[in-house]
View (cartoon, one colour):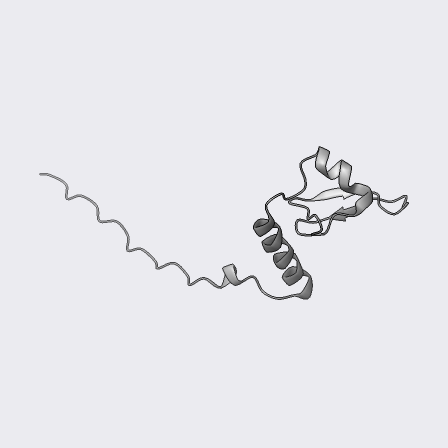
Length: 86
C-alpha cells in the first residue's frame, strides 16, 4: 500500500527545481519518502490513511464535505435574569 501524507508537506520531487505542496491525503512520492518519514508527515494507521485519501479525492473532485451538512444548532432562548430582591 502506498504511503499517504498526514499533513501539508512541501518538497521537490522527480528532479523538479520548484517545490510542490502536497496536502493531507496525497500519496507520498518514492523520492520524498525518507524526508516525509523524518518529519513524521506519513500516516502510519491504514484506516486513517484510507480516510485521508478519500477525503482528499472528494476535495479534488469538488464533492461537498458530508460533515458540513450537519443540521444547524438550535438557537437558545436568552437566559432569564434573576429577579432582583427589594
